Image (cartoon, rainbow, N blue to C red; front, side, top):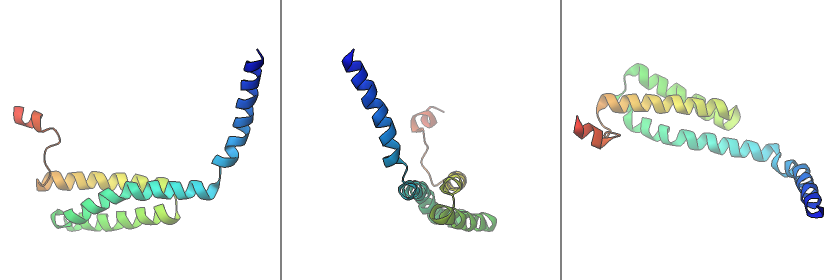
Length: 113
């Protein structure tokens, strides 16, 4: 019984102390920015390689999307930057599929057709 009370007290004390360490706004913003930039890195590299396969309208959308995502990641809302990174990744997938430069995702299923 005493051990249960001690553990309950330790848990409550830990719950009270933990938010003090976890809620540093600057630290949280730095981590969110890092996540946002990591989400954007792969689609940005892929889109740079696929620009030659894009139409003029798609190239303009890529330029606008990358600028908006980078700005949102660095100075704005990282959620908006990550959402734009997902849109850019979808565009990169469409460009890859149209150009035929990507290997099939499921090669065994493709061979069975």
